[in-house]
Length: 372
View (tube, rainbow, N blue to C red):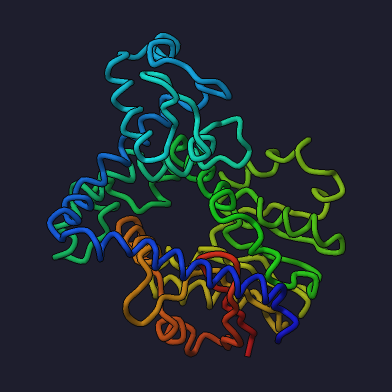
């Protein structure tokens, strides 16, 4: 099984740096007096809303590679100059934008990632997570749902997340763009930490518009891939890459629409690998088992490999980032981030064996499964 893990030294170093960053991140909680620390946390939404509004208003794009006065920016964007100055002053204090002279600002290394003309931007991620659709469930029904066990997003919007997106194309597009930008947040080095070259075909279930699959195909010329997702996502994906990705790469990928809770593409050989990237954490245990049953049916008599890219939480004292992801799952879905024991319980009786859990250069792990 060791042959499926690549770059172990780089992965080990990444994990050590991640652990160090977590310790540094925890320093304020230890050195700040508790009342002040509580106030910092309680008012953190002020900062996120300021960032969201600046992103929506395209301040970073208006600044570009220059420095501009708030008056010039206000004239360009049609804003109130003093209000804009105070917004930028707050964001500059957080390292987002630089105040280069009184009432004059420039982009910082952080705000460059808000620019639409930066291919590595995470603009859609900021807009999606701070959109009214995603914020209202935090603000309105969370307390009641902590009593009832209901899903806050569904309580707010009258539909689960994916049903809501099916009926609201603009938000659906924003969500898809945010998912496409995940690699801009984490980088794509983690894709190199798994030996895709050991297979003949990748079946990327819930693969959005196919960015991950295309990245893998570029690195492995012998591979083919299926990108499987909801019909409206696939309709856009099938034309999104024309002229942007080499023709010899595009001809090796097939975009297929469907509902993973109904069925998934059938395995052709033991040389297939099914990839599920950040899929199971959005599903309840019941729907996860339904997906695993569909996977078992898709395998038929074949024994393809299965790779699940998802978090594996510690049994206690969970990392702050992963605990935050888990709360976002609680807000929007019936899913959760799972501990190793919860993963093992989920897989019990599924027809698949958890062969190994591999570290990678990301917050998630690679859970490697094989058909029993």
